[in-house]
Length: 126
Image 1 (cartoon, one colour):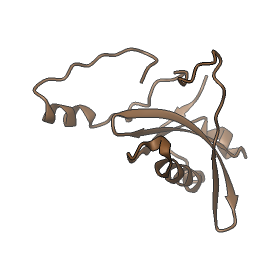
Image 2 (cartoon, helix red, strand yellow; image 1 turned 180 degrees about the horizontal axis):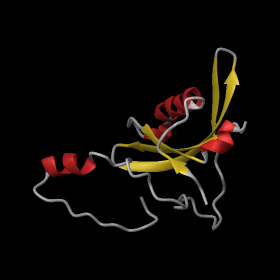
Image 3 (cartoon, one colour; image 1 turned 45 degrees about the vertical axis):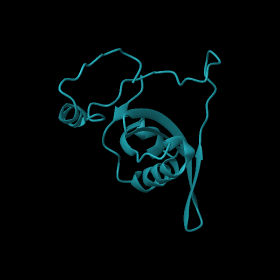
C-alpha cells in the first residue's frame, strides 16, 4: 500500500521545490500555478532514491506526477518519469485518493461564485 503524506520532510524540500518549479514552467501545468499537497512514499526518497512521487494541485485539478530529481552543479536536474499504463491507455490510473487538504478552501470559493454547488463523489477519479 502506498504511503501518502501531506507533510514534506525537510530533507526533501529542496528537491520537491525543484520538481514543482519544473512542472509549473512546463506545458503540463497549462499556465496554472500548482502547489505540492502531498508526497507518496517519502521514505523511499529519503533512503536514497532520486525519484519523487508528488501530488500536485492547481486550479480545479489535482494530479499525481513522478519526477527524477538529481543534484547538478549549482542547481537540480529534473526529469518527468513517464510510466506506461497497464492497459495501454493514456489516462493515468487512479491508484489513490487525494490527500485530505488537497481541496481545502475550494468549496468556500465555489459557493462565493454560485448560489449552490453539487458535489459528486466518485472514488478513483479526482
